[in-house]
Image (cartoon, rainbow, N blue to C red; front, top):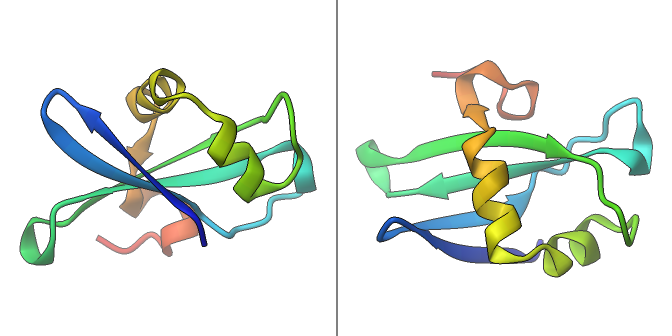
Length: 88
């Protein structure tokens, strides 16, 4: 799946679509934000409603870095999200 990389306060976050389909089908998509590796790996998840394309990959590619930073600010820890299996 396509992935984006953004810089937030000097930290690199990798952004990808979650792949989980909700009951809203193409009206709501999940994004997974990941930083670090190994034991220092941190994942956060958020959902958004695209205003333009209804394809997950195309929609992600059209989001600006500022929009992705805003979505990261509204994200939740991965262990609280069904996309990540509620695993700590």
